[in-house]
Length: 287
Ligand SMILES: [Zn+2]
Image (cartoon, rainbow, N blue to C red; front, side, top):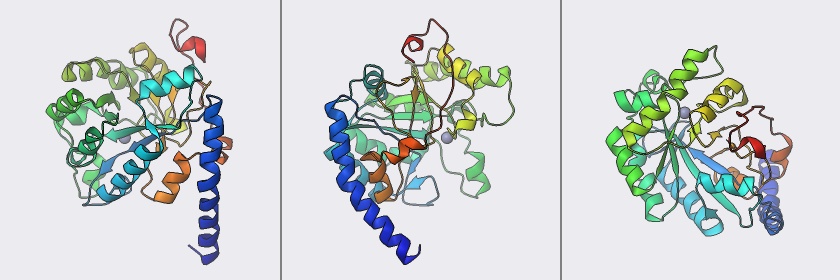
């Protein structure tokens, strides 16, 4: 980064550090505090890659969150958005993919502090123990959580969610059979493995091009309470609550803090995701 860029960036970061919390407090007073939902993938200190954060950096972020925010679950995010009742700065924490190493440090840390978390897994990989193809191709076949680990996590209070059966990329051509396999039948199968209902869903990759109307309808028809995207947006009270917008748990602390303390510029660039729920769906009326 050029020296000028570095100076500008640190000046901007200082401004957001002061203005962000003030704006957030003002919005909270009106019940309108936007809620960031963070997504992480892998917390580990070996084989760093784009979807890994070190245990030290993760702990720093969690310490920051629990001292400055109320950490809530996805149900409560949806309730606050639906009822336009967001009166305290709050965040939620999620993980995607089900990397086994999260059981070493990250999840025990959250449980120790009593912080809610939703942990999204891809059914095929849990059942087969097969690493993700992108990890295998990189020569580092990172281990995946077992079904027994997920049951233990669920019993300890971590909510387990569905991240499709095969970690499908719905931006690629697909038909009703794939949607049925990846969402409709995978939901009860994961529930059976866990011995409890699965309630939340996260689209692999989670960019606008993956969030197709037919797949979203299948999420609702499977009885799931909502779907998560991952393109970087806030959950703004008063908007549709079935779509839970998420923000990357960026290992760069300044960028991470900028997002969670509320940067209103991010609202301007948010893409709109169009979808329709069955008329009788409880979330349909409030969209
Ligand atoms: Zn994923």
